[in-house]
Amino acid sequence: MRDVILSTLKNYDKDNICIATLGSHSALNILKGAKEEGFKTICICRDKERIIYESFGVADEIIPIKDYPDLLDEKLQSKLIDSNAILIPHGSFNAYIGSLDKLRIPIFGNRILMEWEVDRKKQKEWLEKAGVRLPKTYSNPEEIDGLAIVKFPGAKGGKGYFIVANKDDFYEKSRKMVENGLISKEEMENAFIQEYVFGVNIYFSFFYSYVLDRIELIAIDRRYESTVDALGKIPAEIQIKAEIMPTYTVVGNFPIVLRESLLSQALNAAKNIVDVSKEIAYPGMVGPFCIESVFDENAEMVVFEISARIVAGTNVGIPASPYSYILWGENMYMGRRIAREIKIAIEKELLDEVVY
Ligand code: AMP
Ligand code: AMP
Image 1 (cartoon, rainbow, N blue to C red):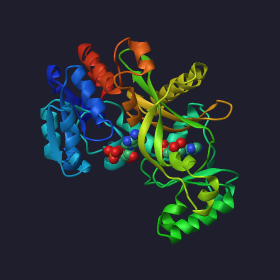
Image 2 (tube, protein in one colour; image 1 turned 120 degrees about the vertical axis):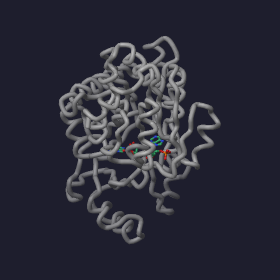
Image 3 (tube, rainbow, N blue to C red; image 1 turned 30 degrees about the vertical axis):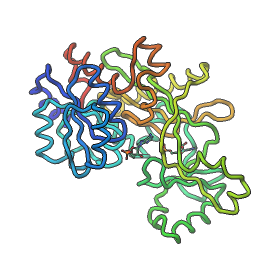
């Protein structure tokens, strides 16, 4: 696959590279950053979202599609290749396209690591090798020995997760959910059960730069989730009577500045995660990645997930986060950082190293 991509890239006019992405998730961030770095931009989007990208004027060209998987359409791919397009993958590539095997267009990043990201077993292996602290996983509901979170294979953006207090609570809640048709029996059997880490969520957005050979902390955020973030508005007694169960549907993000002494935990984790990425999937991490964590009562970091591409939480860092500003001394945010890396790679003739 890499050979195909590199031979496509060989025929590109490097003075006229264009940056393209699907219109959703963090496309405003990506396209604005590309424009600021002087690239031509293309937004491939559905009718429904067109208004977003038209309103902000970040796309030089808008290519309409019916639905996200149409990106794999041969004609569209050829058109994008003729435009010397480099695609920037984001959350919608994972959520709505899945396998990128049929995608011939060079992407910025490592498509193999994006597969490691969506496979929970592989992700766990990666994080374990990196030596970061993880929540316990229970391979069988019988093993549940405390507060646990139950996740389903198809769950998108935290929708459909639920928390259980103990083993008996798991059986009771899952039975109810199957009975109410909220989840199938088969899905319940394949549920991923994890220790629920009680603490505050911190999402670290890093950038691994091949051309500068360093890891950069670009922004930190937390999510705003419905309905879990609304629970505090309802007294506990009413929550119990109304049988309210929190959901984790993400509707936004807040920027965060971390207590400074805690940064070392995240920076060390990032370094180890990047080191391991090179062992498991050549050429290793390229560009943006996110470490999703909970800091517990002892301010210790527990990593519950990793994303091997830009996350939407980086949208809080436009035009700069405190961290990207300290590093760059200028406005810098994930979309722009990606474009800057591509620009430097073109100048140094290193483009082959940052696309896959
Ligand atoms: P959307 O274009 O909003 O449908 O988002 C595409 C995918 O990215 C979905 O799986 C969303 O759940 C996820 N997503 C979008 N925005 C965020 C966000 N702010 N935080 C986490 N996930 C997100
Ligand atoms: P995710 O979709 O995996 O990023 O997670 C969605 C939500 O579930 C986030 O608010 C997380 O904080 C929460 N979450 C996921 N796993 C855990 C865990 N092991 N402990 C505590 N909260 C978690």
